[in-house]
Length: 318
Length: 190
Image (tube, rainbow over all chains, first blue to last red; front, side, top):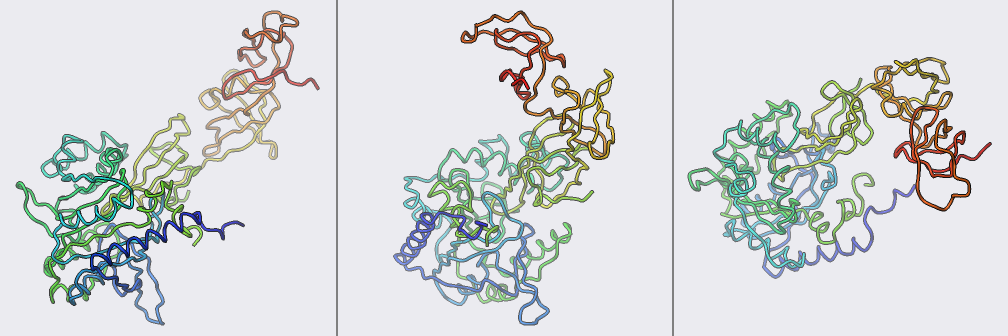
């Protein structure tokens, strides 16, 4: 039985240590301080596409606790309490996400910048990752332009039937059914991502408002867009950033909408996090924030074929 | 049969898809950052042999297929059906032309072959990778001509025709790679 051995080479793990040190030095130079919030908390996210790992027995209590899918809510409470710019290197947990690019437990680098808009944050992300990758430049595309150029399809004005037809042209989906966002996600993963594989470091921004998650929305060229970006490197999704939603009322409505979707899909509803809503009520400073997959970044940096090759012990060995 | 969810799809798992038994070759989990996760799955249709890719929503499930690979002894053919026997139970199975497929030209009586059963009846037959068969018809051998290239057709007892070197003669037993249909060597005489 050789399973006790690490899934990554020790050389790669030393590179991992250097990456962590480089990240800490980067934020230290910029006056962003490191925080360390709980991994196990009383609430989880409502996002219908995220399933947490649940700890059922906590100190004899009947109430379960949730391993955090990201440190976002706790960090926003710190921001509302007046922390200023903060970052965190945190383990995050997502059930059922496993594959070449996924491990149910992984490492996120998440940071928040009061006073910075989405443009400023994309610049900062590029400042961090380009030197680590030894690359010179990054590109930015609007979500809308990318669909128009790649698929000759406007993701904002095309009908649901048009989107479904376009998806079915590039993928055998069998009898798959779903709403507008399902077809958009299918086109993104099956038609757009292969094109991005040739494009190096790419930021995609201004997503459809229906995919805002926790980003604020605005009107742009006659359509409602989310102030959200995704970073792709050679076609691999690496980071997600928001101009953060600060309106407690709107946040509460999005939680309710998520739970409606959960009900429709037969998924358990999630109790909304009262701490986060109270913090937003108290006032979240105008800020942008981003979560970046550190394992994937390391994978791209050292050309590893799968995530397990950059983790000390992957899910099978942990 | 049990149902299998996308996260249980492993290479080799047999599932029912669009009414046909299929074997899973590969399963990749994909997710666009936020939003819907998918599984991009490569499958082989065990009836037609077609290999293709289909995408599922993560968490969807498929019914398992009652498919088993059994080693059986080939008995004979009556021209319409090919008959096989399970060596332990002596139970006999008949396979039609579609099930026997390409393997038909390599079947040798009393030799073991792999028969894939679907709901208890033969779905496909796989010949062993190598078979030894006797030549029943070929041009006369050229004695001593072992170095020179060149080949000639030779008909085997099963009816298959393979290309053999010029020095091979009628009545000899040769070893054939059934995957490529190519001559490998003279079989050692026992």
